Length: 218
Image 1 (cartoon, helix red, strand yellow):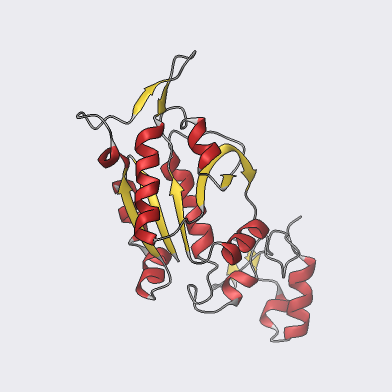
Image 2: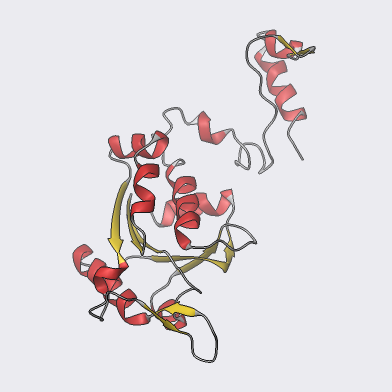
């Protein structure tokens, strides 16, 4: 999956994308991040990409540099590809929606990272196909929300985690009826006067499955 990211701070992604699961996904040729610095598309000699919002007191990313960046990516892809904008006013993300996104956005996408006080509405109206919220709160920039979205999406690509059970049987998965998963334990068997449930030590897979089902977090 190729993800083109338009950002004022592309360096914010580098350490995260080259560690742990995101790194493994790239090494398996399942994830291809391409970072674009929005300042490179500025129409001003100062590389500035923001202006004061009409009728308001805060700064907003201007439409011209964003349009130039998006059109440049379209040209490189030789087609129009889906554009995603992470915003608190978007549709609230869920595991089920992520699974649907993976099916329809498998090939290549563009993600716009906002800064200041969002982006000019005309970019959203003309280019954005999906406006997504990671939850009901506000962050200081779009880089964090974009990383959350990409991480959640990439990890469910078949082959990224190795064994499919790693993502099929976890919180909010279809197999667990979209509920939070059950408690997990490891060695030692006794810790702080608390013992691992005996059924998990029994080797009886049917009883273990029953225990997991009965201990899903509501």
